[in-house]
Image (tube, rainbow, N blue to C red; front, side, top):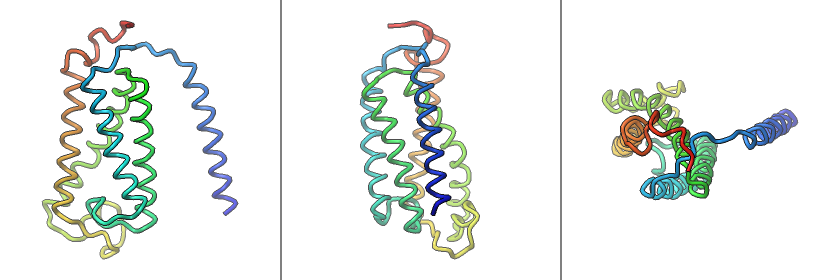
Length: 181
C-alpha cells in the first residue's frame, strides 16, 4: 500500500511540474477551431464521458468484450481523462490543441485496428486473450457486434484525423499554421 501511495505522489509531483512547464510554452499555431470542430469536440466530451462513466459503473456492453471489474474501472478513468482533454479544447478552441489530441487518437487507432480486425476475422472466442496476452478462457470473450461497432469508430476517427491533418484547407499542417489570429 505504501508503495502505491508513494507512486501516486511521484506521479502527482511530475504532473504538477509538467503542467507548470507547459503553461510557459508559447502557442505558435493560434488558429481558432472551426465551428464544426467545436461541435465535434463537444460530441467527444459526451461520448467519452458517457463511456467512461459506463465503464466505471461496470455496465455490460460498454466495451467490445466483458471486462474484469478492476479493468473496467481503470478503462473508465482513462476515458474520463480523455474527456477532460476535450473539455479543455471546448473551453480553449484552438486548432493546435485539437490537432494534438487527434494525433494521439490516430496512434491509438492505428495500434488497435489491425489486432481487433484480426480478432473479428478469426472468429475466435479467445482472440481478446491473445491480444492482451492473458490466459485463454479468462473471461475475455468478444461480442462480434460490439467489436464491429468499435472498429467502425476507430476507422472513422482515423480517417477524419488524416483528412483534418493533411487535406482540410483550414486545418492542414503547412498552410498558415504560423499565423496568429
